[in-house]
Length: 208
Image (cartoon, rainbow, N blue to C red; front, side):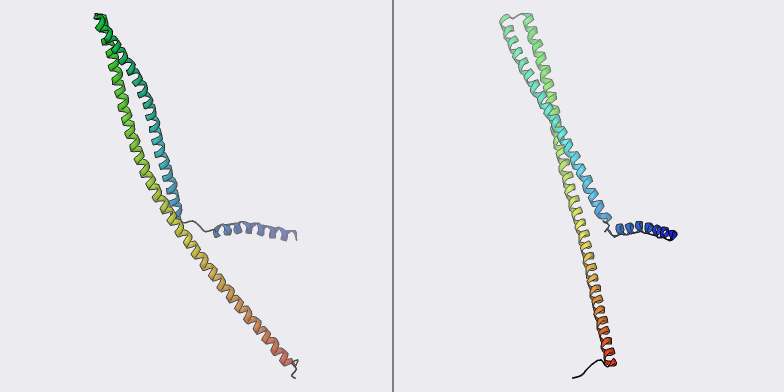
């Protein structure tokens, strides 16, 4: 008796994983074309984020260069004022030392001007970099929209197929149910007919 119970328990345990597998198999599998399209959307979304990040980084760099330009402009303004003051002094005194001071101040001013030109040139390059990065963003966004449309189209097609399949299965189930109902009704009629015949033959039917 105990052995029989153990054997029954083993059979039940063996049946459980099989039932689970059957349940998993019943779930409708998503086609590879749909999963690939979804993966492409995610990948393209990352590409857009990366391109936008580059624009932000270039914009930050440009902001820093603008701050440098403002600082160098302020320095140049001071040096210009210094040159003007020394030139005025040299005109009044006309000494060699005053003239040298003017030349030294002018040299500093020219160095500052060249430095400012370099920074402005760098800023110009950064602006071009931003424009190029923005074009990349626009291109990647366009690719993303295409990938999204493709994914939605494939998903709709898959859902349409599932709905069609479900409808066909429902129709099949309804036809089966109708056939079963007809069979049951026919069997019922046959049973009632048999009872009537048996009753008639046994002489239980009375005529008035």
